[in-house]
Length: 383
Image 1 (cartoon, one colour):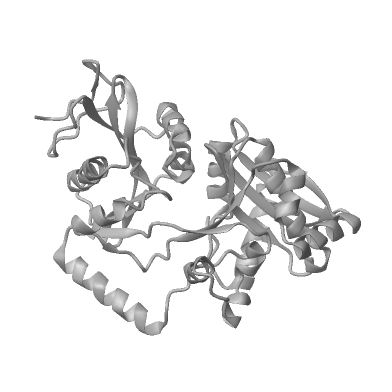
Image 2: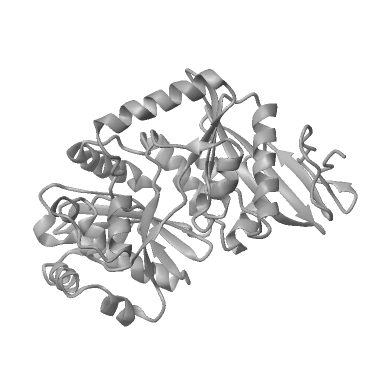
């Protein structure tokens, strides 16, 4: 049986059947599209417990610059999307490589649903003649991990994909947010207010200013800026700005910009995305005020959690186990985020699958060589 990509017997507009794969579960049809914009898919993700902005068509709009391609696979039941995934493909010197970030998103957390979608991802990878496929399941998708390993995926450790984060509970009012923040950070927030630090929301005209602050911060931290260009930031801004899903805030003192913070709202979550600040502004505490303001904004927007977007995994593991942090961990860039409280969360790691046995062996050798350099500590959160 070939999956039909049909809705109640009518072909889905813009979708085509995906051939060379297992049949859809009873009562469902499969369809695939290469169209970038897809409001129906985004609405499904926004209402799903595992839906995240990295799987949205808006994220695809922001990434597609002529080098990236989009493939979206959906399972329909009774005319409604039940599950699926979005795959972003780009050319490399090794061939075309695809990424499914925070997907797939299944119709249930049971093994058959995960298995069906992962099989579909491999089927699509074969159809597209991909050299490699990288999958990081959604944050609550730990049940996908044994399925990935059973399908021949191996743990990905060279791309340094974020695999832990810090979540802040937004229940209650602004007073409750302030109460949850540890006392010393409450002091810093009030210091910033007393010293005359003021906040403003930015617009598209402020993107060059934001990017330069972020770029200079990355230079000081000796990491490559990501996004790597002002143009990419602008595309992401335009993709998410409709409906107020993207927020860019600046902290200023006496007319001088000190710091910036961006946030993306999707579903019941606000993610603190990228930031930057000047090197001489720390005594005014602009970042503390920006983060507190972002938490209050996220709460006003109706979000349930604010995702600080990254945390070193070894730090998250230590905190969850109740172990004291080492001196090196306490001095890491993550200390800023930890100062706001919140709870550490371990995320499913990324996995990679190769069509070529030669590439599979080469990757394992590269991973072995990386392990000899030292343990992977992750990118940290900055701040």
